[in-house]
Length: 156
Image (cartoon, rainbow, N blue to C red; front, side):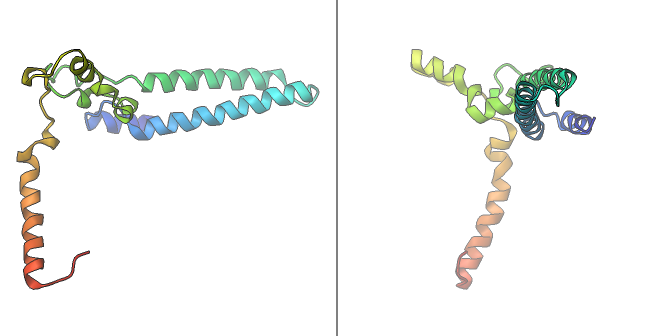
C-alpha cells in the first residue's frame, strides 16, 4: 500500500520507471530470500519448532516479490508511448535497470557494429540534453565565474 503514492507520483511526472521503487523491490527481494532461507533451515534442523505454514507463506511472499521486481524492470508505456515520436531518444522510454546498464543504447550499438552509423541512425536528443535548455543556466553561471575571477576571489 505504501508504494501506491509513489507510483501515482511517478505517473504524474510522466516517468516510465521509478528508481526508488526499483531499489525498494530489490531490497525486499534480498530480505525475502534471507527469510525463506532461514525458515527452510529452521524447518530442516528443528522441525518441531517451525511450522510448514510459515515456510509456505514466506515462499509465496518471495514469489510475489520476484514478480513485482520483474514487472518493475519493464517500462510502463501506458502514457508515454502515445506522445512520443519513433525517432525520440530511447533513454526516455527506458526503465531504471535499462538506464543503469545502458541497455537502451544497445540497438544503436548493434547498428554501429554492423555498419557505420549515419545521421539518420541517430535519435533526437531529449529536451534536457539540448543546448537551448541548458544555455541560459550555463551563461548565468559563466557570467558569475567571470565576475568572481575579475574581482580576484579564490576558487572553490
